[in-house]
Length: 356
Image 1 (cartoon, rainbow, N blue to C red):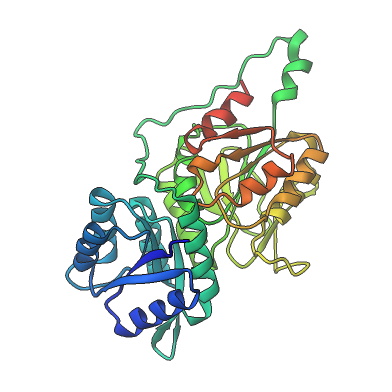
Image 2 (image 1 turned 180 degrees about the vertical axis):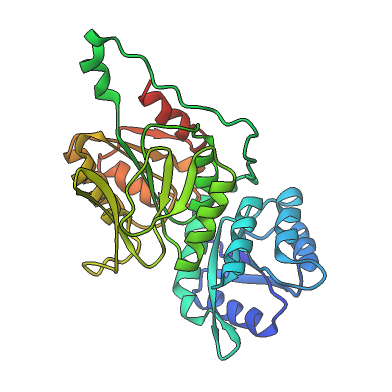
């Protein structure tokens, strides 16, 4: 089997050496070249056509954002960003993913030196999964429309109300991981204003990233998008993203459905966890729950989908062809827990059609 061909772009000789060591150690990846700035990275990407690129953000001559945009225009390639665990780093990383990058690996600061040594397994696993699926999605930078589209509640004749209500739901829950931020950019902005249900989202991310992700989605969407807060009541036309490092559950108290944030429970691998959020929502909303599983590694969400189906709710999975990593969607599809499998660009349309 041919090794995965990687290009490392970073202005730090220490980081270039570290990343190369981490990748080659796996035995399945070879680093074919290294670049010291974005301009060199673009030139090498065009000339060498690697399978994957690791890209720093802050570099001289041409930074990572400019490099991602140029590469996606001239030599589309899967790109993983190396991002600092700061709000500025998170904002820049989300911008890079809008421009075409598929995912990121956070760099931690230790004694004033950026370090990703403890991310070796995560980086190698992501590269192998991303290159296996070979999905390169075009840039997605939606703009918030000047005139917001209103959601029109369908008219239901009284005699048909009982039958029509079978297709209704009162909450939409979404799970995503690798490739998720870009996928959410292609789903959430297309919901019209004044939808009659809340949206709950779990995206596997560190805590400094979920706030900027919510802010960015809010800027480009008709509906309101925010990072969830403990104790706040769920409102229609609002999308809530679970904060990194906390589990998000739904509780029904005093006839109101509210968000309950807690530290990791039951030693879940992921925090936030799709399973925890979806199971909680299904227990509260019962058969009026609609679940969506989007791109991501692993099986987080399979138990949540099972609970949704046990309660009589509906489920949708993103298809293999548009998933950066077909792990989480594949798990629920193979478990027989999915009502419909659709491409990324059809997800919002499919959700809206269920209520019409």
